[in-house]
Image 1 (cartoon, rainbow, N blue to C red):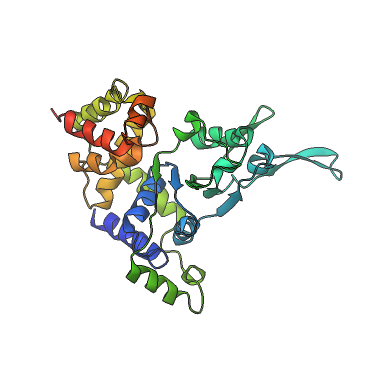
Image 2 (tube, rainbow, N blue to C red):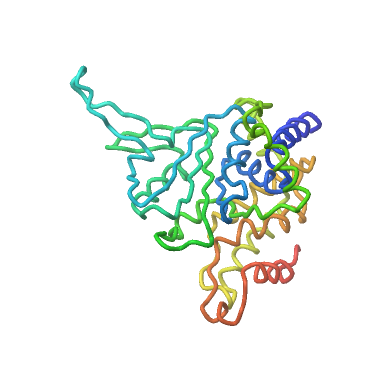
Length: 310
């Protein structure tokens, strides 16, 4: 555990050289990396969404690709496709940007549902299938999607099936005055990302992913997770509850969080810490609840106090 904690703290501290004052956000991304999960970041422009993804990839020496999603983007621009080679007189498969370790899907809701759907198989099965032939993605593989919560003109809301494939939905938030001052000073000559070195390798990340699977989680806590998630489907304020995938995500992410906290076992506080990030984007409130001023955070907090750990 001491060696594992040392590696994880090294990764987080390295990212903090670029991402100032957002240690918890960094931890959420590391959890996604350790569990083969995908993260959706929804926040206003300029708070560092892209930089967090880039800092993570550089810190582990990963192959990083960024797609700027626009209305005219095609599925083949994401997955790649067959290109005719006149020399060989045959079609060859040309890999798209999805063949990377960390894919930044920037402003994912600005492209059409047809193009959005090109990520569904990649995010769930970690492969691309074209013309009946499957191509495995590199390991590790992680999608970090971004959305702007302010501008809705020219956007296409993500379907529930796609939203559900993101393990967490988080925001970054603004910096304090002192933190923002530090960011400005740090960029007087060059951006810190330019000199950021890798501190872990991809093989070490894969080893850490295996360690997460060995973190102990008791049957009592698993029962609590399932009760918590299934209860979202019968709450009067909720029109659409969380899927079984939410239970799996909550179990996996709580084990990774325990590891980040230096433990090889899960405690109830880990579930409380991650509940909103895992469940918030997976539930849809009823029109009546929305009109009456209910917000998802309060609904989930109510659920956490209502369901006991037996």
